[in-house]
Image (cartoon, rainbow, N blue to C red; front, top):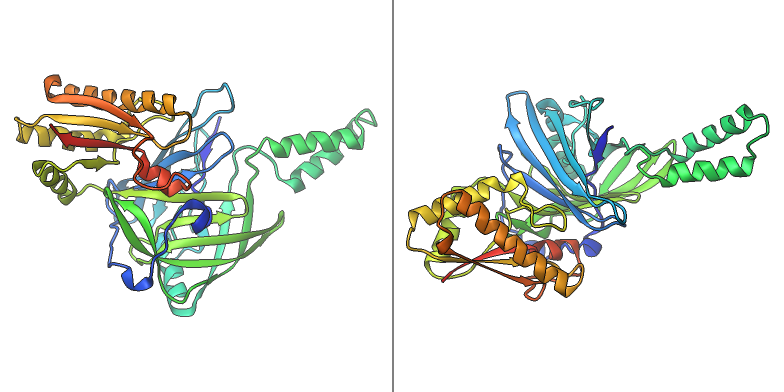
Length: 389
């Protein structure tokens, strides 16, 4: 059975990006390096979930990614565990004009799709926006096993014909609608995208634990295909070396990048310096399973850095406090935040830190850092706080 995950976006105001004056945009570079993690928040009826797209290897001719997520199940169902891989050719990162953001895993999954990128523009596409204000694009959504309207209509006719009148046109139509509603119908659309603003629009995103205004290009257009037209609206990082899509919407598909992290010695030093000055530190690089205190493997590098710091400073005693967004009830969020802080303590003890040096606690959603009305704000509120006793 194939499992698929889509990296998709919604508009800036709905998702909570905070554009600021262009003059305030700093010169920020997000390097394309092994360990780079781009965290996207996807909104679905069953609940928000985050997908983590991590660079796992860079060669002279290709870049390898692994995407992991826990997609919420329907009521009463367990979350769907997703792990997918994708390799993008360097030539395509430079010149491709096809986006194929939905990434598959499973026995029939293709790992390489030549002439396309995943959740980033090519250097050529970004440079066209910079110089002419326009770029052409083909957007391919492979779907998650559903059928589109055209396919459903053909199946309905075949059903009526094959049944020799035993299945009415109305019944076939209802079955076709059910097939569409099961979701995940794929589509391919193409067209020209055009800049909305003449220059960059800074977007506030968590970058290595710090809210940072990233310079972005905003562009939109109408993309057309056999199954109908779809409005597209996108923001891309204004960096030809790594033009990450920071958010995009194509029809009803939508995703917002809420956090970007990569291995950085300066980040570890900043954490240690703040704690040395007895200032609390917010940690965002610890990933938990959906609505759970289970720590996901993508957290290992962050936990290793905290453990190494505590070994360098053996007299330090830390308080680990969990924080959540406000989705769910206050009592359940408080309990979840307490369990998550206990999980972090257990993970550090497993790395050789004495349990006596760690105190745990949880604040639930009572101490937000940002608004809970947006995907970006909720991502900032879901965190682990470290403070020296």
